[in-house]
Length: 184
Image 1 (spheres, one colour):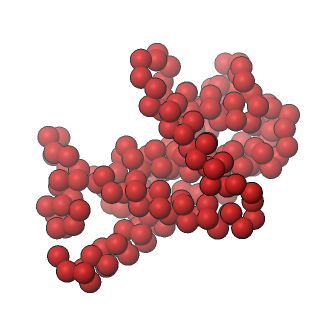
Image 2 (cartoon, helix red, strand yellow):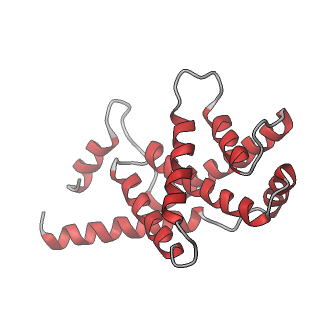
């Protein structure tokens, strides 16, 4: 494959990742912000910031787990890095803060051997990050609802930006992608 074709493919993938994030990172739900703020009795800005981190983390997790090929998560991560770099002008240490939050959400999802479902573990991280260290059942149920909405939104945005998966059960997505496009 030629240099020009590689450049076009790279730009296409970058544009798809940017479309994905634009569809995913919508304004926060006001009810969610008020509810979380009341649960934790914390500053509204902290709750908003954590919900934004949760949106991004869930979006990146969805890109890792549900994408058509192995490169999509890297493309999305690069697009998020660009957003974080822009934020660096307005905030101190946004990159380190993002990485810290991302790792906690990712580890909650990847924890093996636990009886608790993954979305519930992610909801616990969200609540802990806003100051609710020992949530009651109603708080946890509501937080799982928030996380679930973000996951569904991420899946829809991923399909809209990168296309729907139509793969044989016995094939790795990256192999099918390489066969179809000659890229990868």
